[in-house]
Amino acid sequence: MSRKHPIKVTPFRRKVYLALLKVPVGYVTTYALLGKAIGCRSPRAIGQALRGNPFAPRVPCHRVIATDFSLGGFSGHRSGPQIARKRRMLEAEGLRFDADGCVALSERWRVIAPRV
DNA sequence: TACAAGCAATAGT
DNA sequence: ACTATTGCTTGTA
Image (cartoon, rainbow, N blue to C red; front, side):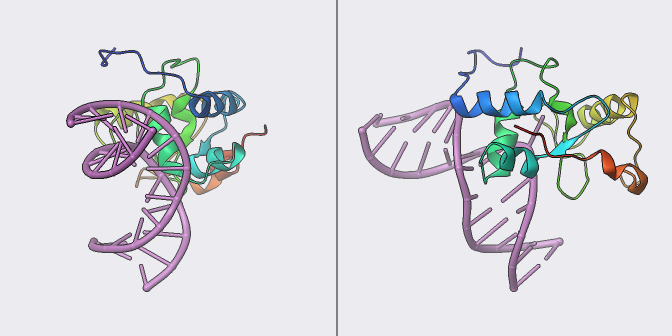
């Protein structure tokens, strides 16, 4: 939508998207865990791949949060209304958040590593 | 093909 | 809070 040229789906991105499909409704993963699942040691590369996710929302990029349980980014932004939307989507799937915007302590069992 | 710069992060200091 | 490091993409030549 926001890009002029379609983004090339490289083998790396393909792996990211396929692994993400293994995260069920009601669960979330992190950039680092998702990376480890596909043998990538750079969480930033994961974020960059998701940034241009051409299969949204079929590939649930909103289920990827940061290791410190904060929300990370969404749709190219790290704060603002886009992040609020990401939070609402997750709340609709059963997650709850603390006032500081992190996943509530009682909900952290929902953070999983996708099995590949 | 080669090189530089950027990115939705994270660990260490 | 700040810096270094990370791996992959994208742009420029």
